Length: 414
Figure 1 (spheres, helix red, strand yellow):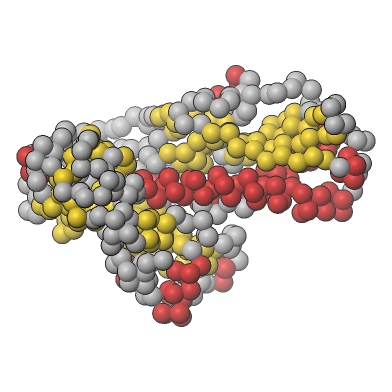
Figure 2 (tube, rainbow, N blue to C red):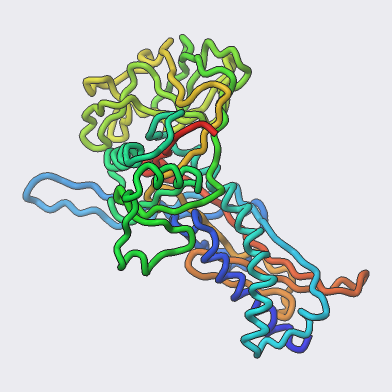
C-alpha cells in the first residue's frame, strides 16, 4: 500500500462519519464519550463505562435565596460490549490513491458505508430493544391501529406528567405504523420549510411536540400464553426496590418487557404527589413466574421525595396494599405488538470509549472520536495467507437513566 498511514486515517474518518449519520435511534439520544480511556490507554470488553447523569435542581419557596450547586453525578455501565466488522483487503484497495477524492469516495461508498451499516444496525437493534423494555409507560390501545393523533397525544400527556422537557422530543416507529397514521390522517404531518430543510435520515415530520422518524428496527413485544395474573399474598414489596411476586400464572413465564398495572396503585405527580387518574404502569425486568421473585421497573417508592405511587385519592400506600391485587397486562395473550417510542433524548444514554490499542504502530491501528462516538480501525497482515485484514470496532454501553421520560405507543397486533 502506497501510504498505509493515510489510508487507515481515511478509513477511520469515513467510518466515523457513517457511524454518526446512519443510526437513527442512537443519533437521537444522549450520547457520551468516556475520555478516561483516551487518557489511560484504552479499554476492553468488560470495562466499566462512566455515564454522566442529567443534572437535577430543587426550587425553594420564599424571598430568601437558596442556591443549589451544579453537581455532575456519574453512574457506571458495567455491561460494556465490543462489536466489530472485518474484511480482507484486496489488491485494488491496497493500491488506493488516498489523495484522489474520486477514489476515496468510491471506496467509502462501496466498502466503508456497508461495513458501518452492518455494524451499527446490530448495535442499534440491541439498544432499541433495551430502551423499549426499560420503558414502563404505554399509550394507545393494544389491537387498535394508530390512525390518528390519539395515541401520540396520550404519549405526550405521559411525558408532560413525568415533567420531561418539552424541547427535542422524538417519536420513532416503523414504516407500517407510519403508513397507517398517514393513511388515517393525511394532514398529520405538515412540516414547515424551516424544518424540512433540516431533515436527518429517517425523519418524517413534526407533530404532537415531537420530531417523527421511521426505523425498521423497532422492538416487538411477544406476550406470553397467560396474561391472567395477580400479586402474591406475600408481595415482597420493599420501598425503593422493584421486588414483586406473581400469583395465578398458569404459564411458565410472563414476557420480559411486558407492561402491567396493579389494582389500586395509581401514578402521581413527581413533585406535588397529587394523584393522576391513570394507574401506575410497570415493566417486567426479570422473573415473571408464579414461584420465585420478580423484578419490575420503575422501583416502587412508597414515601418521601421520590414517591411514585399512591391511591386514587393521592394517599400514601404501604406494602400491604400490593397484596393479592389483580394485575392487568397490556395486550392479549400469545400476541405480538410492535412498540413505537416517544421520548426525550436524556431518557436513554449511549456511551462509547476508546479501545485498548492492539498495536503501537500508527500504520496498523488508529482511534477516532466525535460527538459522543468513538471507534477504532486496525489493519494488519496475515502472513499465513499473505493478505491484509481490516477491522472496525466500537466499544460501547447503554443505559436508561430516566426511563420515565419515554413512552411506548402500541397499536394493532402484528
